[in-house]
Image (cartoon, rainbow, N blue to C red; front, side, top):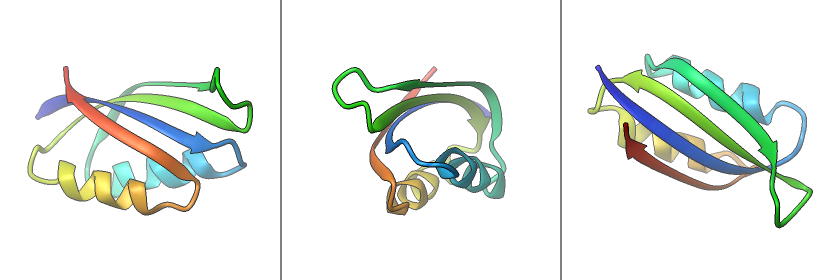
Length: 80
């Protein structure tokens, strides 16, 4: 198990966080920490920072699936 930090910029609409967490659960990631705040630049967007532990093999596919969500503007990841 490897720890990752996902930083996601998404449109602030109901249900976006649920769709993101469902993808993480589907690929077997455990959410260690989650912080969601309004974006400083655009009040219609949220910045979501999620610390997860899981497999390094499925991370690229997980990021692709999250990025495909209509409400996700940008996603980046880094190792912890």
